[in-house]
Length: 390
Ligand SMILES: *Cc1c(COP(=O)(O)O)cnc(C)c1O
Image (tube, rainbow, N blue to C red; front, top):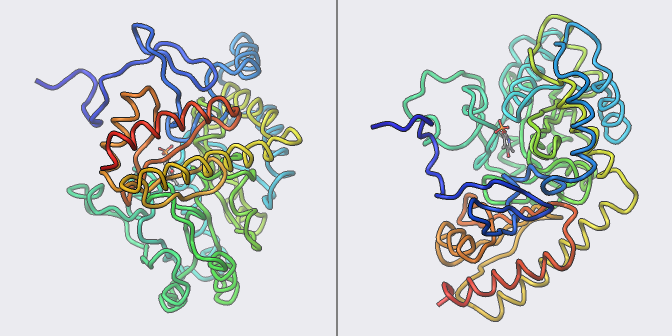
């Protein structure tokens, strides 16, 4: 008989009742070190005092008014995101998929308004993940996620991630935009080759196209910059953000330059819940911490410690790690044993991680961890390597 909770997930038999910093406590009191953060969501760990304070204050004042009225928290958050990125303007929604849908609409409508209604196709990449709506599923790579859900929307052409020649060759008079992740998360923490993102920008400029980055997983300090595009020598026209933005409160955002965003006048796109006062209180509190001087240096310092530690484990147990990947605290280890077995073994050892494509185990700790937490995680990973890395 079907369970009351629709069985769309093969869940681990584990339920948590409390979180504190990087730790989660299961029913019964067992403690886990959370290096998965609900898939790169709990930017500052659990129950961070500043987030608790700001959200509690807002809970007592006002929850929801709709976007029929001004929302001061949106104005504050948008100003800060604009001040700290290429963007001129921000749209708030509730999730990553929704932010991507808004971005796809913007890519298409930009060309429509520019008098190129036939330039409505978008280049997307192999191994991409953009969400579970029909549009974002079509933009994503996995056939498995689409099976039986057709007919799917049209308008996407796929090229191999990281291959600039293939991308340039795929451009037709109907290509109006490019949508990629600057580092692929679900695909296996894959970084494109040096110069690729700059080449994408150049091709887009040459052929009158816009560039959109899906930064749902890479954004909000995860890579050691507020957004991952900052590591490159280019700027996109549009980026989507979500996961880490609310530190655990559901919120998404679409950031765009004026040129792209001008295509969507008032009335052309909307959301009931998006950017409500609670979400804005949470996201503004996250930025209070993430934008503090030295925060990104700390992320990079913790990253270095984890990478160095994993490299030691790689040498010590040659049957375990094949490759260490990623930037900042968006890290992955491609393992020799099946990644799901490694994730299960680590969970037995009280360390939570998340599997990804290409047999990768994702390591996505809170950005404010300390060396003690890193050492604790490395002890667990070393023990898993000893057990599985034959
Ligand atoms: C998680 C993710 C999404 C989807 O976000 P939801 O909030 O689950 O809709 C989209 N793109 C990327 C890169 C993601 O990692």
